[in-house]
Amino acid sequence: MIRGCDPSLYNEDLAPIPLSRRTWGTYNYASLWVAMSVCIPTYMLASGLIAGGMSWRQAISTILLGNLIVLVPMLLNAHAGAKYGIPFPVFVRASFGVRGANVPAVLRALVACGWFGIQTWIGGQAIYSMLRIIWPAAARFPGGIWICFFAFWALNILVILRGIETIKFLEGVGAPFMLAIGLLLLWWITGKAGGFGPVLSAPSKFHTGAAFLRFFIPSLTGMVGFWATVALNIPDFTRYAKSQKAQALGQALGLPAAMTIYSFIGVAVTSASAVLFGHPIWDPVELLGRFHQPVVAFIALVALLVATLNTNVAANVVSPSNDFSNLNPRLISFRTGGLITGVVGVLMMPWKLVSDFSSYIFGWLVGYSGLLGPIAGVMIADYFLLRRSRLRVGDLYRRHGVYEYDSGVNWRAIAALAAGVVVALLGLIVPALRLLYDYAWFVGFGVAGVIYLALMRGSVRIVRAGLGDRLKK
Image (cartoon, rainbow, N blue to C red; front, side):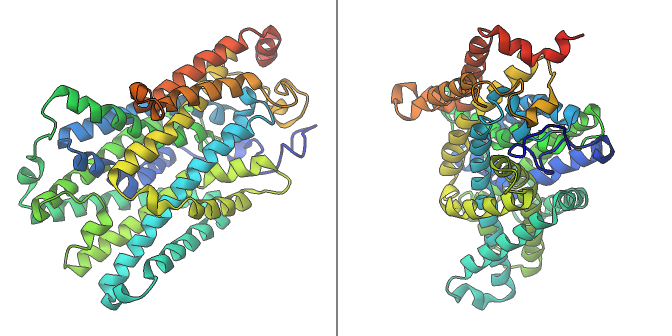
């Protein structure tokens, strides 16, 4: 335990991880990203681009570019976790203050709750589809989809209660298996459609560069927004890293490759559905229900179910559990935070967020990226440009230290965050400024980062306090 820490800022779940417990190597981080990427939302991300009119080359290029872009803030924010062993809600105290950190933490947590609900809804649909294959009469059972939804919800809660090491085990074991199943599904369905030739021959539906850009720009923002969540809370995972090299190399190898490979599966399978059924089917659960080969469909649905569970507990539970715990560490543990996540995820009505590809990509992904981009802008500007990656870890857990600011809140960071969010989302209100919304993550990131630096550099005392360790040398 840190000496002199404030009980309102500290519990064992938020404490720095000691070197003896930092056991995650390159393979763990690469497999983490493979397991998190191999899931139905990734598939739907790619299939949504095809359904929107892109060719397979345009869709894959958009996804690859988006993931290469988001990898940059991912690795930058990961540095503090690996260096100091601290989770996201503690790390963000350096820029927002020991109490002000609750603002970005709660915003991040609410987005994660929405994702938890989406993944759980998709998992429930997969279970329901499996039941209909094994037991056709289940299709006539009233409320069957809701029973399956809450059954999968309960399974996720069970994993949460078992803790972080269960997540590490699931990712390490499940990642290779999930890729193999995905490739098997690709081979099977393209064979049904007559091979890759007919599947990948469909041209782009955009006949002018302007028409393509109108779809491409918000789509690219959506690709970045897809992992903009984990780009913030990646310290929750890298705090367990053996070294900076292990986490950076594992992520650089795992994220772009896994997303691109599995997205290609989504692109090819969706294109095959257009060949077979006359129109692209972007939902894989619906697509598998179209085939009358129970064994193949059942195996594929089991694989998708396991992949969804893997992604949900890793990407959408770890962060909000820590974030909610940060609100009141004495009363809310990691497990309690996970239970809160589960409840809020249901209340956000995920079945509406994924009702069609337009709502999913241009509504959900682009919309929340305007909230998270500004947080990333403030965090990166503070840690690398202002503090030169030096933190006083003890003061992150105590009141009246260098991160106290004004009664625990850095109003400069709050102002920069608010400005970034307002500018990024202004295009929703003012049609003439729609481009700001289409670039929501990028706009919010840049505006918040620049304003934060301008406000903070006006306060010599705060800057010197943040660089205190360096100035002493």
